[in-house]
Image 1 (cartoon, helix red, strand yellow):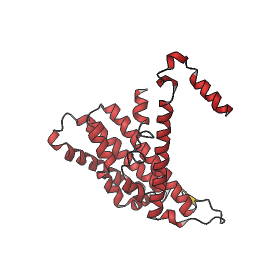
Image 2: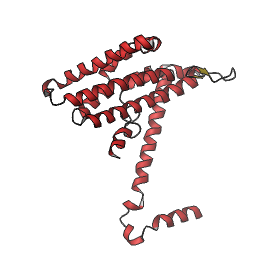
Image 3: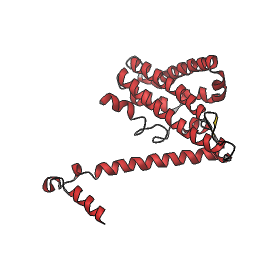
Image 4: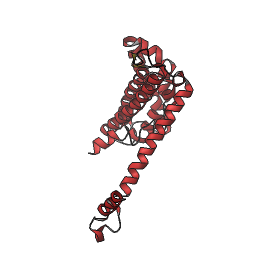
Length: 228
């Protein structure tokens, strides 16, 4: 259960993009189409996983005085590796990602997980944390890219969805549309998070009078609410 929690926390509860609002620059720039968001997400996940594992392995060997420069060098090495791989095997995606591929080196998500988690935990936990954060980042980019592509271009992963009948809304293919979709998704996730917290607080297990009512107060309230 602990391992599962380490992995799943980055997908929703601590999503780096929609909850912690990190990596917004590539999020807004690379989500005009779903395929671009998927490519950026996978590349970032690869770098995040590799760098966190290496940093966790070397955490006792890296002096505190130079830990941040050392982390950046390790991250830059994985960025270079993924750049070479994309350039050779997926040149079109490499060209599309452009300068944002190199900027993964200074992505707040990667450096933040390296400093806050990988440098203080075991290799296994660091790998799960990095993988979960990477998956959460990728899902956020694909979701945002899908919305913008469908509304802005009338396609999804290049497949035409308008059938020559619907007219795409060009605004969503522009930066303003990106901010609108991003704000909407952040608001939805924030609302759902508050709902889950409120639901937990209102349960019988947290009620100070639980022993006296025998756990029946929730049932009575529900019945009265339905009667109204």
